[in-house]
Every structure is written in C-alpha cells, then in structure tokens.
Length: 321
Image 1 (cartoon, one colour):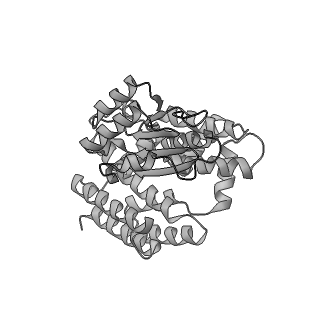
Image 2: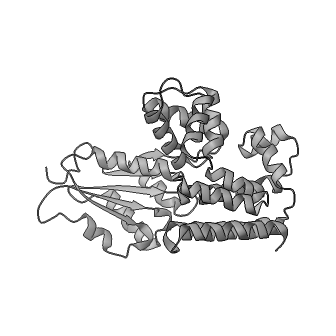
Image 3: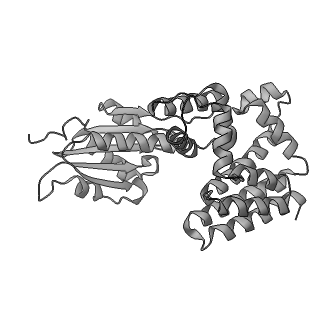
C-alpha cells in the first residue's frame, strides 16, 4: 500500500558494532528477509553527497520495493547525518534503510535520534575474550548441526587464530569434512592433512627471528593451498600480540591472560617470542604488516612476494635492522 515499507522489514534497522563478520551477517539477514527481490543499494556514508539519499530511496519507474544499506554512518558528514535522520523519521514509500555504525563516539547523536524514532537496533559487539570466542565456535558448530568438545575448540583456536572470519570458515570446513564429535585429535588430523605448514607456523618462525625457517614454511604453506590472506592475518596477529604483551604492566600470567583476553599458554608463548624485540622494533613491524596486508589484498602484483618481503622486514625489525 502507498507509504508502506517492504513487507516484514522495519523502516529503519540500525546495526551497531565493530565485529565486521557479525555486522555483515546482520545486514545479509535483513536483506534476505525482504520478499520479492527488492532493489538493493549498498553505499558507504563517507561517499554520499547531499541529495544522494533522496535519489536512492526514490520509487523505481518499474515499481517494487527498495532497500538502502548505508555503511559506517559514523563517518557521515553533518549534512548527510541530518538527511539520514530525516529519512528515518519519514521513510520514502516502499523504501527501507539499514544503517551500520561502529559504536564509537562519532555521530553518536545520530544513534540517539534513530532510537527515538523507533529504529530496530541489532548489536554486534567485538568478540575479544577467550570465552567469547569459544562461545562463537560452539554456536557455529551448532548451526551446522555438529558438536565440538572444549579440547577441540581450543585446538581450533590454536590452529586458526582469533579472526572471526577465519574461524567461521574453519568451522564450516570441519563440519563438512569430519564426522562425530569434533575433538582435539580431529582438529589436529584435519589440519595436518590439509597443510603441513599453516599461517601461524609461518608467523611464529617470523617473530622468533628464524628467517630461513619462516621463508621455507611460507613456500610450503603457499604450495599446499594456504591462502596468502590467512598468512598475512597470522603475521598481523602475532605482531599485535607482541605489542600487547610487551606493553602490559601486569606480570602475573593468569591475571595478564584475563586482562588481554588470551589463554595463559598464548601469553607464555608470546613472552618467549618477545626475547630480542624492542618497543621500537615492534612498532616498525606493525607498519610492515599493515603494508603487507594491503598488498596481499590487491594493492600488490604478487601476494607471495609481498609476504616474503614482509617476513624479511619483520625479522630485520627484531634484529634492529
């Protein structure tokens, strides 16, 4: 009917949080709930100019509903934030809005305005603590109709790391390729069978300053099908862990593990890997992994070369070069 929104879809949905995977899943769920294949516009708030929103929500010449996804509204200019608030207060006929916000202080007033107007809010908080990551893994396996015991979950975190996208992909693969309860032995067998060298093996040898071993493991990893993105992510996580553990003032391993959201064994390993590192070297290694990540994700011509260069440079940061 005139002035109504797509059936089953709130006029405005606000998705708040910094966990990209959960935000993306929430957006997809809202889009999938709209019947009759709506016209979907997916834009970033920072790219919008005054008047763009009106054009995006205008009725189509061919009829049908439309859904406008505006990402990262914390980056919206003052004018665009005002337009979003006006559109949310009086949505165009047949149009629905889905807005994502990181949850920080920027454009926080817009969140308050949208809440007053009755926007549906979906929270996607960061999954930081060890226990929260275990809960995430349990939910992933449950959604796939599978069970994993605590040993299997911990082994999976050890093998894959903390990135939710990588963990979700690993759960999907294990659920499809194994049988029975997923335990520590099942995870170990699966990852040994898939690749002798993983991204975290490469990353561990790198931050330990073992250049020859790291490059050898890198070549084996790439040859056995490990994604360059996963290796880059593992390097970044290991360097971040060096910085977090190195900067911590708490010395008790148990208290430090709780404060950083890491399992105690991980804290012990990082402390051992910190030998030979300086604060300045860790800072320079952060810059190296940021550049490598960009090159692996499309800015460079060869992901393999970018990773070899990054490993060489990180080892040089450790040795003071």
